[in-house]
Image (cartoon, rainbow, N blue to C red; front, side):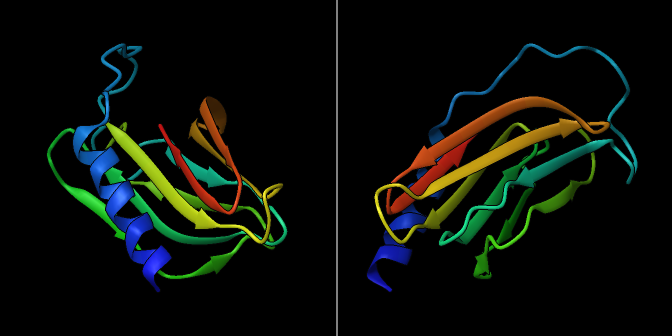
Amino acid sequence: MKKTILLLVAIFAMVACGKSDDSKDGGGNGSGNSSGWALKILKSEGVTVGAVVIQYSTGETYMDSSQKPLTKDYLIDIKGGEPMQVAVGATGVNDNSTLTIQLLQNGQVKKTSSSKGTILNASL
């Protein structure tokens, strides 16, 4: 429980203080429910996701803190356009555990981040 709380605090700190990527393609207006953006969390045996945080330029934040074992790939549709920041926290069973996340636009990988160890934190 203590590790989960520390993980959530680290994720919130990263989202609040993280750098933003100001380089945009200019394609699309990012409005509506079908923005074309998605977050993909890749399958990794022995890894359990503890928190997913997505922050938008509007200041809105999406958070999911349900425990998800990565026995399969997870895909989260991102509503309302390109996210400013994404952070995913997880725990692994050993030092070789790996968490990999991808930011997709219309099914194509735009950004990738990964983390390795027992306490995993990947952000974009």
